[in-house]
Amino acid sequence: MEIRDLNIPLIQDADLKNKVVLVRVDHNVVKKGIIHDPYRIDATLGTLYYINAKGGKIILMTHVGRPKDKKTGNINISYDTSVEPIVNYLQNKLHITLKIPEFFPHGTFGYLGIETSVNHLIRDLNDHTIDGIYMPNTRWFFGEEGDDETKDRFANQLAGLADIYVNDAFGSWQPHASTVGVSKYLPSYAGFLMQKELINLGRIYEPERPFIAVVAGSKFDTKIESLYTLIQKADFLVLGGVMYNAYLAAKYGISIKGIGDDDLKYAKEFVEYSKAFPGKLIELPYIIESDTMEGRIEGQYRTHKVSDLKSGDSLNYVLDVAKESFKDEMIKEIFSKATTIFVNAVMGYVPHFNEGTIALDETIDQNRNAVKLYGGGDTMQELKRLLPGLYIVALDSPQYYIFTGGGAVLKAIHEGSALGLAPVQSLINQKNNGNNRK
Image (cartoon, rainbow, N blue to C red):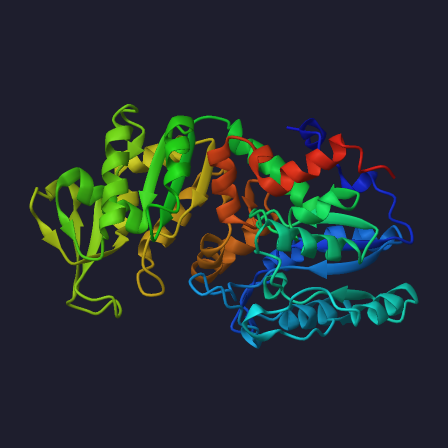
C-alpha cells in the first residue's frame, strides 16, 4: 500500500517555512517521572528534523498517563505525569533548548485553558532564543477529554498558538481535543511516523499468507472486538495471558482463580463464535499454574497439559504458557511456515513468569522469512527486557516492525481500516474540505 492511496494530507506537501507548527506526538513513555524506553520519542525525530530543516518552528504536545480520575473527574497535576522528563531527554539528545509554559491549575479541574503566559515563549521561538516549546501534559487540561463544548474551546485555543498542525501520534487514537479537534481550525497534516504506522497496518489488512495473529491481555473485554476480526482475517489465531485462561475455562468447563464473571462471559461467547472457523484458533498445549501471584516460588507452581484438563477441574492462578508449548510439533510447524506474524502479546504474568513470552519471541525469530509486526506498549517493553539483543535487531531489521501503539493497532484492526481511527479521519476531512492549502 502507498500512503497517498489513503488520501491523507502529508507533511511533505506543507509549506513550513517560517511557520509555527503544532505537533501532536505520542511521547507517553513516562511512569512516575521516569522514562523506561524512549522508542516512541525517537520514532518521531524524523518529523521534527524535517520541520526544522524546512524552516518551521515547533510546539510539541503529548499526553502522559491518566491524571484524570474516571469516577470523580478530578485532574491530578503532579511530576508523575509531567512532560519534564521528556523535555530533558530531548534536550540532552538533540542539544536544543525547549521550554514548558507555566499555567495555573484551578483546583481539581486542572488547567482550564491556554493562558497568555505562553505568548512570551512564542516570541522567543520566533526570535530563535529557544528551539522549541513543549506544552504541559494535554490531559492536565480540562478540555482535552471534556464534553464537546469544552473540548472544542480547548482545541480552538491550541490552534491559536500555531499556523499548521501535524499529527504524528498514531498511538493516541482517542478523539480528544489535541488529536482531532485542532484539525478543524488549522491546515493539518500527517507526520512521517503516522505515515509509517499506516503503511505497516496495510501489511495486516492485506497480509502475505499464511498469517498468524498472537494476542494476549489481562482482560477479554478490552480486546474482544479485535479478536472477532482477527479470527476472520488470520489463518491462525493464538491467545495468551488472562484471555487464554478465560478461553480455557469457558471451553473446558474448568475453574481458574482470578477469572472474573465478565471475562468468562466474553470468553464463552467467543468460544461459540470461533466454532464457525474450525482449525483457526490454535491452543497452546501447556500452561503453568501457580499457588500464588507473589512470584515464581519453587514448589508452588507446576505445568499442566491442556488436553488432560477435565470438566469440573479447579486450578489456582494460571500465570504463563509453558515453554514446552512452542516445542510442540504442530505449533512449531505453524510458526515456521507463516509469512506474516502479528504479535500483541505478553504471555505470562510479569515480571516473574517470563518463559512463555521468551519462547514465543524466539520461535518467531527462527522464522527468517516472515514479516513480524509487533504491537506497542507492554509487548515492546517485554521484548526489550527479556530479549534485549533481539529487540535491538528488531529496531533495524526490515523483517520486523514495532508499532508505537498496540491499542491503536487493535482498534484499527477492528475498524477494518486505518481510516476508521478518529484522528486519521479528521485529517482526511480537512483535506476534503480544502483546509490544507499551502
